[in-house]
Length: 330
Image (cartoon, rainbow, N blue to C red):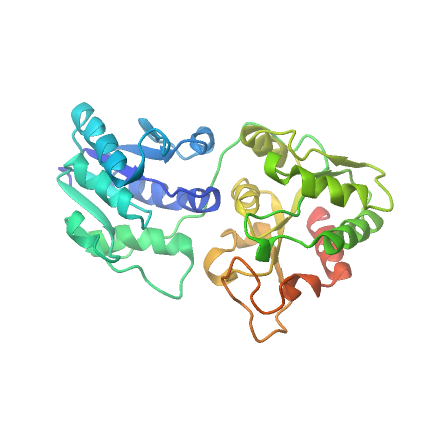
């Protein structure tokens, strides 16, 4: 396919999924080394492209400015007026993303089959089941090429080195079933404080600040524990991870970021299937799951059986603290 000169990729809309898509970007660059590879990214996540594998032009898509599928189509037409693309790859499953790709009028548009979307692509393929999300994405390229491809790691790049030996702890998640309950978070942080001597930094977005503040206020000791919830932007958070020695996190976007930066990451799983969505690089991760409940793993955002997720409440604080100590001492 030496005639392929211009490629455009629509990246996923969630932080963790966008991080996992770095492997797809690298695979496309390997498959088409002479082509320019441009990217479409959702506004609010465009900062992460500074840490992405090498790529060309960036198109930042605002869902508030270009609303719904009609807005997505309008955005695609604007790109089409600026550039002509040989290939368009669509990683999100959304109808609006498929409409955006259709409006580009690329020579070939490639995406996953879902509902009524296939007619919007020239090449539509089934999303494989039972594999990791990273491999789902790269399977799209493999199916298009009709050949197997080597699977790269998930990678973000940073100019920051490990300047200190602080440990970053993220107790949050957008889904309640993945967020540590308040009392459990207090117990885990307390046990970690007793186990390690490193400085501890708590993080959280502005919307998570109140919850993290409550946890921080409930700690029996805040010795060498700093609460930065609501005080760091996402770009600053990337730099914070890059300079830390380890990260302890729930199953969430920040866990994927730290893992992709090469930081040793311990991930606590409640809801969610780690075989599909755990941070991908196994050498830099430790996954901890209770694994004793019949409902595990589920993918519900709210615990429908217990209300408060028992799969997180029953996690062993000693096991978590020990796993973190092991990662620190690697």
